[in-house]
Length: 308
Image: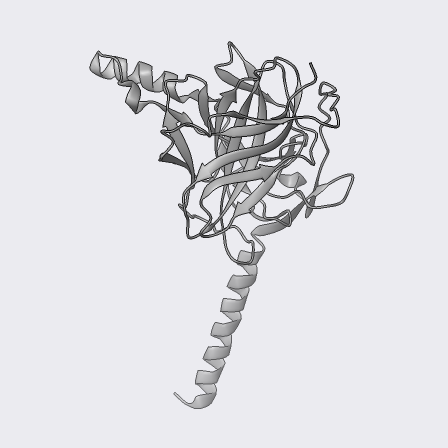
């Protein structure tokens, strides 16, 4: 076979490869999720592919609001959502390169703060037995009820949790939920802010997230404080796909039945962890579970002590 024939074959082979690559690129659409009022990207918004109203899979957009959506997958609609925004569901054929989300207005109680207001830490961060850790994978949300000792609405200044050392960049989101049904379940999200951050490699111990710049109110009846794992990020701030790295947090021994978890990409509701463990153990072994096996997240918040 002479050189001209070989060259011709190689050229055809390269053309086929280019066509395959072009065909593959046409299967995905690049989307930017944007705040309709500010035109700023909505960081780490949730994107859920649906089929007949049921979840096929979910993911997050990146810090710039960008995500690639594979249109060859068997979904018929897609839901975009984020804390502080109204969820938006579009049919597959309605997808465009820019998706606009509208802010959701949440009416909160008015709180008057005096100039010499005292700040107090409440919750579970001071527990002596908070040396155990649990982890939540990407998309997981863990929440624990924190009582308001003053029985008056008061402003939240910061959120504190305890984490282990990790070698990775791990994203998180703060949640604030009302409490319903004797306070054993989180209710609606009562934060109107998308409060996110990234833990850097080597960070450990008490992590305090400053919330003083947000108008976050702890209701008189208390609230569920939540932490969501967004996933692992590379050094350029891009989400690492298919990562199994979890977000670790300290727990303390407690039979408190006001500790719940859920998966943000699922339509399933909350699971009360200690209530479920207690019943499951009883059904399986016919005896009560040891209290030492029950734990709860060691979350705390700093609040401004309300006026008398």
